[in-house]
Image 1 (cartoon, rainbow, N blue to C red):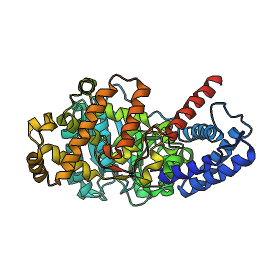
Image 2 (spheres, helix red, strand yellow):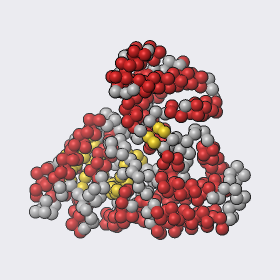
Image 3 (cartoon, rainbow, N blue to C red):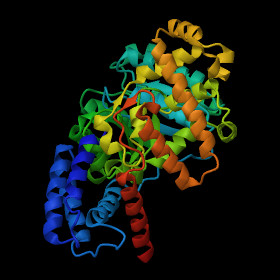
Image 4 (spheres, rainbow, N blue to C red):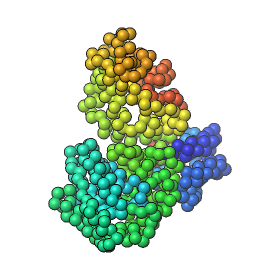
Length: 496
């Protein structure tokens, strides 16, 4: 997401480098590039015009902060306007007392609505909320079965000790079209069941269509009037660009939706929907679907998305993902082992699995400052990570504790067991020994010393990050630029 847009923004803003002052002529030149980039990203024309006009008004004549260059100053201005364009957003789900909180999910067929119901249930379960998911899509019998499977997976696998349950009346699917209030009746009985089970949240998976029509909107209007849901969320596919924005506008005019959930946000799309929805519909984006798994679901934060677009990364989201997978106690134990140089391959395997649960490696790398803009040249081989796990699993417990035990015959046995070459096994053990030595040396260094050591390690052996090739040098000029932009931006805000 946003790769092409980020590249075009970077080119446009770099053209201001070397200028001593931001003038109307050079800003107009840069914004011409930005305007083209936004239109190519399928951003709504009205949004593009307003955004460019606002940036031009903010930038013209502004003196460049002494610590920044004109291009960096413009990044700060563009960042502010991107955040304004997509926000403000309160992504937390409003809960009512007494429960249950009723959440009505709507959207067109193929938008990912049913899967998103499961993701929202998993999100709520992780926060200690008991959830009942009701199948109110009687248009296609497969929808009921699909939702049942999704809900059962969430109940069994999602984090948290709360309950996620499923409610359906599959026999009612045959009655659709014979009785107008069938779907409404299912929703009303689901609400009674939610109260009986003391559920905190009731999620209604309503019917969708291939297009917006009076029959669809009539049914949704009926459910809305009968149950008076506390939140109405529209699920839209980020891949369909302006069509997603137009459908969101129509739904909002009829139902007064409380928020939009953008699905397939991890796909290689142009990103225009994310930048257009709030301005065109008036309804904010509340959540993002970022993958196929039930935990690939994020709260929407405009400032973080703006950071990704401008190549400043999204470290906050990266840290939050890490905190979900690794407890503070586990992190302290690993840190202590690293400081003593006693990290084992079992520890390495555990950390590798935690990282992989956070999401695809390329997506995680895109959250690092200065890395996102170079990802088009990075080759991430997820299968290489599978091979690494296979190599470690083929070792004995003693070998995983001490890789020095791996002599030539043992390496040969491990390579046969993992289906890899002996050179792959030797490469892993060599890199692991270097990492052990480096982490022990780094334990006594300050933050700057650790960054320098990491840079030296990456330069000495670029393959230290398995499965990733073509990653730009760590700690380079881009990272410094990002830090300067953010610090200068904070100083400007304090002056205001």
